[in-house]
Amino acid sequence: MEVNIQTLASCLGISQRMVRQLVEDDVVVRTRRGVYDLEHSVQGYINFKITQAKPKKKEMTLEQVKTEHEFIKMRKTELTVKTLESKLHKAEDVERIWTGMASAVKTRLLAIPVKVSPEIAGIEDKAQIQKVISREVADALNEIAEYNPADFVESLSLEDELEENETEEEY
Image (tube, rainbow, N blue to C red):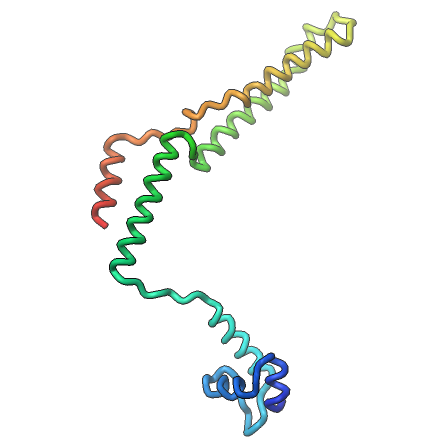
């Protein structure tokens, strides 16, 4: 579809002067004097805006690179300290521990009927039956409360620590 400059400017939400500039930049398609290809011009303008919106990689001085590197090393050290203090855990460790705990709790909960049925078989008092079942459920659920931060700590050998430090010094 062909349109004039006024219609194209209106469709794109820009001035006629900007349309002329975009023609020079090969963003908008002019078919002949004063007539523009609406479809290709809109597509070109959208691509132009997308390209404009992308963050441009900035040039950095050597000093800025060194500063950023030092910041990254400092952040890595902070995370290592938090890990050693058991205030930060790797996602894989958390998943492994919780999967194990959930599995143990599930097994314990599923075993309750087998475990308590002989014990409550002769009991007629509902309160006593409820007490026995509640005790077993509480015991099973208490396994979750047995969280030990040491389970999450992945100890590094002295060789691994030295190797990491040597690698960092190379940069």
